[in-house]
Amino acid sequence: MQLKVGEIVEGTVKSLTKFGAFVALDATTTGLVHISEVAHAYVSDIHDYLTEGQTVRVKIIGIDEAGKISLSIKRAQEQQ
Image 1 (cartoon, one colour):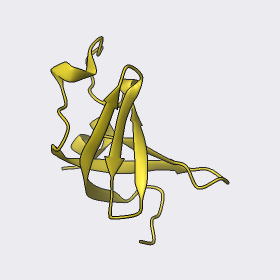
Image 2: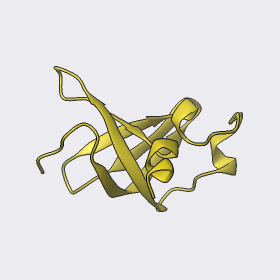
Image 3: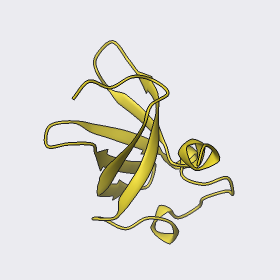
Image 4: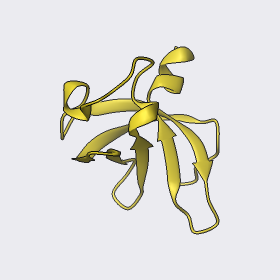
């Protein structure tokens, strides 16, 4: 899957941690939504907003040199 910063794609929440959610974009590509990028409001417990297996729209906000993908749910919502 060829991804570009700024692109909005759909993915599936694979796992939740206290610092964010890992979202599968396809069978081999996973990115991280940091807890600060989940909602416009302050998020103290990510489980209040997301569940494993949930389909979400995310915006790709960064891809580092190691290939790690940073995602944002709140920025994807702004562009609907």
